[in-house]
Image (cartoon, rainbow, N blue to C red; front, side):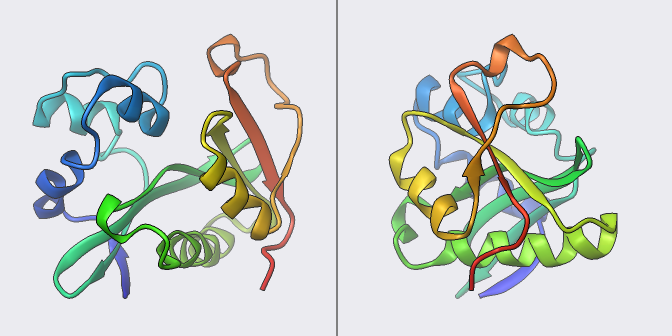
Length: 156
């Protein structure tokens, strides 16, 4: 797997990973529009304003994620693994690579993310990596169905 910047040519494939409003908003957050067009997807995913990454193997997009500085931590957002490739460690690889980049880029050694409470597979992955639940330090009523998780170091 190759960790690289997300490229526009990968967008059509990524868009196929989300088949309904629930899947789209679980991944992209409550304001993400569905049905989406390429233009609204690009805008709602903030592809032009956030550091955006992909894992690519055998010429196909395997995983997608973003990371940026939020509340003093390298924050991971919009993490997803291709539905065809889940369960093969690509989520772990993506998070580790983003953490490496984010630590160097932002000069921080703590990581955070939001996960919807109804996504037990993702929660289990994040716990295995060393994330634990914490109260979110800023008031955000739109995030009530999400769990805020923080790690100070990723588990090996």
